[in-house]
Amino acid sequence: MNGLLDVGLLLWNQTRQQWIGNKKPQKRTQLREPTISWNATYESLLGTNKPFARRVPLPEMVDFLVDVWEQEGLYD
Image (tube, rainbow, N blue to C red):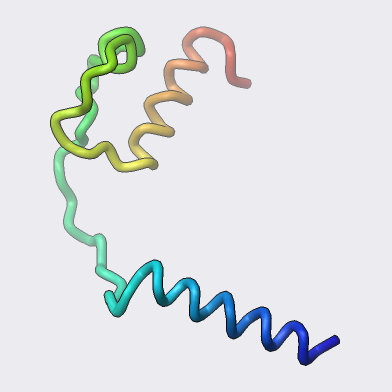
């Protein structure tokens, strides 16, 4: 069984390498202004099908949605 796991891990690593290429991890120490305005509402942000002016980092979007859900009593 152990040999099967080794083959699976090898295939996983090969596939992952194809996905990410030869890029080295980048340090994300640079701070920048949030993409989402502090006074944005759910409706103003997501009530349209227009694309955002720039990409919104996933952690920032998650924080925004959790805040909205907490305000509306949808998230405990």
